[in-house]
Image (cartoon, rainbow, N blue to C red; front, side, top):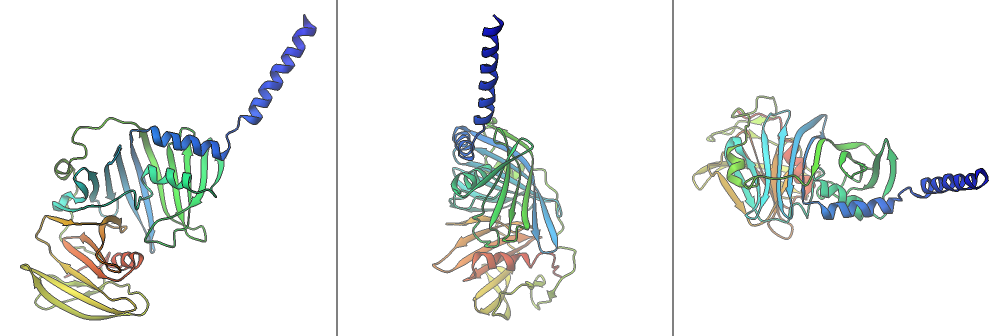
Length: 345
């Protein structure tokens, strides 16, 4: 009996050893499983902290995402520096950027987020892993760590990204880096759940405009900056501190359009564009096309208005800004970001 039992024990040990050696999943196996999980899920809820390295001061957001297949989205972005919340909402009526504390909304028809998905959306992270055939994968503390290409329109400096997923494919951390592998954007997930239940009106515009408990901000910013006092206008003029190479600032002209007083700053050179500033009275603005753009301090709306013409609109401290012209998206964002922290008097 002992002679018979010993070979059986050795065979069992050898079988277990082989299973341990050959049972390890390859990157292709993991990606296939990830693709399957992405296809089976009915939605998700997530909580995260988003950090954007803009200039010398990082901008931080608390990010809450609700997604219900196939097309319902609710993204609440709360600025830690400014203490206000904006909501990106997609439902069967279109895509909205809501600013509840101002009772302001932008509505537009868009393929967002399919055409320009941000880092904080789970499917953006998953698809960047699935689509990159040159991906690299390793295991760290029972998590899959992927290094893949970054493909975010409007910012050519973002070239690589690293994404951490648990063994059941929940995201825990992600970073987008420049060519020197310096992290410029990072997100830390604090909570994530697949296939949650949603209230019937969870993605309703009116509910999200009226039930958000948000902090009211002062009428004007209180920080120092470059300000030009404009005669005959109802507000001071904020002059962007950034100009693309080969561009010169022209006139600053006060105008009245549809009963609203505005100021137009003209720029000419390598690119030709205008910066328009005013205090809007309309609570809702609609565009035929566009997409939300996170500027680091607020969410703007970017629309293509011609073959080489774009329009970027955002609102900050009661002032609505519009950049219109032939600037590339990345340069528009640079100009917009250079207005933050400047006060008008």
